[in-house]
Amino acid sequence: MGEGALRSIRRVRLFVVVGLAIGCAALMAMPASAAPTTLPGIDVSHYNGKPDWTKVKAAGTRFVIAKVTEATTFLDDHYANNKAQVEALGLAFTAYHFARPDTSAGDAVAEADWFVTNAHLTGKNLLPVLDLEDSGGLGVKKLTRWTQDWLNEVQAKLGVKAIIYTSTPFWKSFMGNTTWFASNGYPLWIARWTNVAQLTLPAANWGGQGWTLWQYSNAGTVDGIATAIDQDRYNGTGLAALKIKNNR
Image 1 (cartoon, one colour):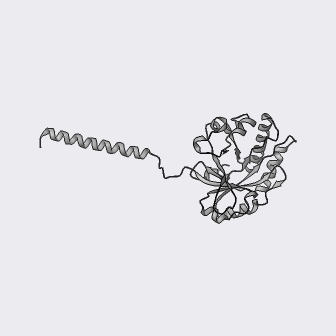
Image 2 (cartoon, rainbow, N blue to C red):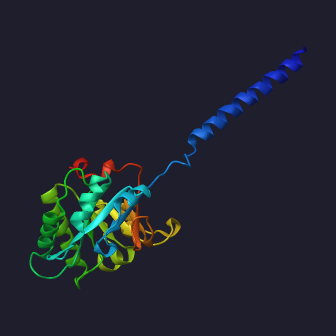
Image 3 (cartoon, rainbow, N blue to C red):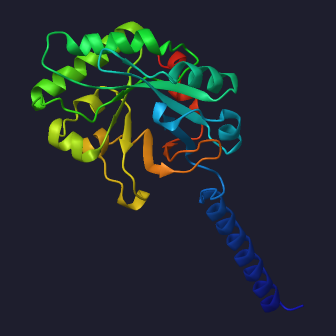
């Protein structure tokens, strides 16, 4: 075999080796499209009746957020049963409080105390939630202060920072699009019933941190629940980081 032929063979071998190296690097850099990047969950209240939680779990639900309180007197009469059954099945669970702000002295603290007393959350549960979608007629400054007071009281009692549930229009209109809560480490649960391409977040993409939970539908269907259901996603692949015991 001549010298020219040998050089040609070496060039071909070099091209093959380089090509394989580039191809392997590209494959390693590609995300695993089959690997999930979010986890499915639901949120419920007495409006959803009495779910068959075994079927709900079998349908793929990974976490449940249940309403427990509203204002300073309302207690969801389905909460205790929901909590007991969901936890017995080993599903991740937490509770939310529907805020009813008003101008009475100490209202935020009273609502927070009512929530903590009735939620009975422990270290194994997920972070508590403040459902903020009613301004109660308060202006931006007063509602911001009210929200801070509620969150501070819950943190004093449970030792963690609660998740804030809200919508982008509400946050912009009634909270002045403040970035204070994002900057101080409060996770966002955004309500937006649309596809991800149209999902916009308040407070400068929540201080650049994005969403932690996303309620993407208020009219979903889940096996085991007869009514339309709120459906959610957790922005991650493991819920351990969202547990109370891991945030103290």
